[in-house]
Length: 86
Image (cartoon, rainbow, N blue to C red; front, top):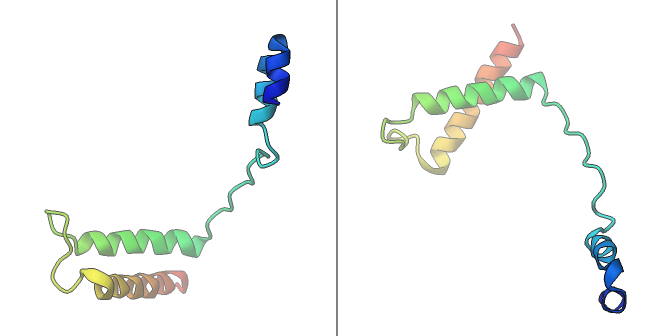
């Protein structure tokens, strides 16, 4: 392509466009809508996390690290299941 562009300067803009295009530039797939459970879980997770976050942005004692994250996950799922079963 570069050789063709050098031989035909008037074709350079068209050839550069062709060089930049490839098959992966298809139309993007539409995103899936989140389920009602997913939306409720996300809302509950954020609420629980905010409740245990200090003013300085750190997590309260016992709520930091992997164990704290797992506690928040469990509480958010529990709250969401409770809401969904009403």
